[in-house]
Structure formats: structure tokens, C-alpha cells
Image 1 (spheres, rainbow, N blue to C red):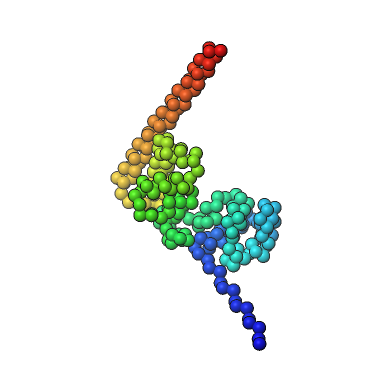
Image 2 (cartoon, rainbow, N blue to C red):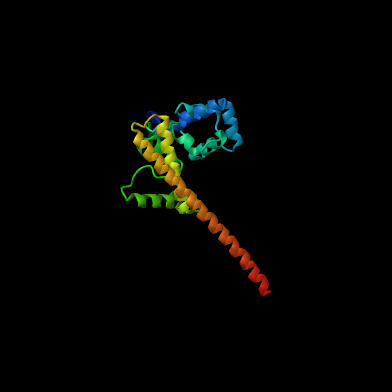
Length: 222
């Protein structure tokens, strides 16, 4: 009776995001001018030991990182987790691969990674999708700010300015009148933000006055 030969280990499946992580680890390590030995030592000091050989395998797409590995790498490189998960592209016309979503625009992928909006539509109404995303993806204090009029106005200004900058940078203003309409919309958004900030400042001042008056009333009762 002959001993059964061990079956060969199946090749590791690498999706789009795992490939991005491998490429970003290599890119960021070189940008930091670190050897694989130095990165391994930094990981060991961070409580997530990975041998130099294993670091090399990560970069060659022969060893996938765990979520703990990814968090430690992001801390050591001084970047967000998204900077490891996504390619460093931001052209409005760029398409990048994200596991589970396929090919999406770089702008949509980064908005998702930075916690602004969902990456893929669930088929529900846009307002319902946005509310559910805030509820399930954003911590309470940030969620309250985003739902406040100041937060909503700030987001509108930010979105418009990002669009203007991108179109100017990549020369996508094919009609001057479109550029003027966008500029006017942005100016109006800035005015709304200023009005909401003034209103918030007034509410804070009123609250401070009420606290002072309440303190005086309490002192008088004694």
C-alpha cells in the first residue's frame, strides 16, 4: 500500500483590492525609503510581526494581508487604510477595480473609502440609501454633524469645489457657460454655508446667555 501523495496547495486567489494592497505596500515602502528588513522590524515593534521574507511575499502577491496586518501597515506608513486599499489615482476618467464592485470611477471609490457615500447603488431611493449609509457607516457624532444644516452646506460646497478643481485640472470645461453655471452654484453654496455658520454662532451665543441667566437665578434662590 503506497502512501497518498499530498495534494498541491491551490493558488491563492487575488482580487482587485488584494492586488492594490500588494502594490501599495511596495510603493509606500519605497517612498519611505525602507528596506523589507526595516519594515519587518517596524511591524514587530508595532506588535504585528511579519518576517522580511513574508513582506517580500506580500509585495509579490504571494501572501495576502489580514485586516490586522493592513491596520498595522497603515499606521507605520502614516496613511489611511484607504490608501492601502485603493490605487493612488484620482483622474475623473480613471476606472479602478474594487473587489465586490468591479470597475468603478476613482472618484466614486475614494468617496466610498473616505466615508462619504456608498460605492454601489442598492436599487433603493437615493435619499434612503444616503440615510442608511450614514446610520450604518458613520459614528454618531459625525452623523449628527452631517445631518445638521451646517454639515449639509459644507458638503455641498466641498463637492462643488472638487468638481471645479477636477474639471479645471483635466481641461474638461468644453463649454464656458457650463463653467459659469458651476461657479455660480458654488458661490450660492458658499453663501448658504456662511448663513448657516452665522445661525449656528447665534445659537451658541443664545445658549451661553441662557446658562449665565440660569446661574444668576440659581444664585438668587440661595
